[in-house]
Image (cartoon, rainbow, N blue to C red):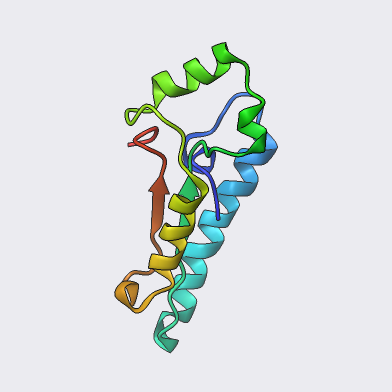
Length: 108
C-alpha cells in the first residue's frame, strides 16, 4: 500500500512522500524480477480515506480536501480493501507492476 502522495508529493511531508514513492519503485522492480515466476506485484495508492484520523479534521481542512476530489468525498476503507482484493484475485492475473490509484480523482 502506497499513497497518492507517493506520486504527487506534498509540502511538509517529504519523508512520507519519499517512503511511499519508494514502495512504488520497489514494487515495479520486484514485478520485473518475479514475473518470470508468474508472481505479480502491484501497488494500491489511496487518497484520503474516512478514518478516525480524518474524523478529527476541522471543517475548513475537510472542505479544502473535498474541493480537490472530483468525487467530493473521502474513500471508505472497504473501497481500498476491495482494490487490494481485486489485485490479489485471479481476475488480475495479467496485471503486474501497476499502481492502482483509489483516490476519487484527486490525482489523474
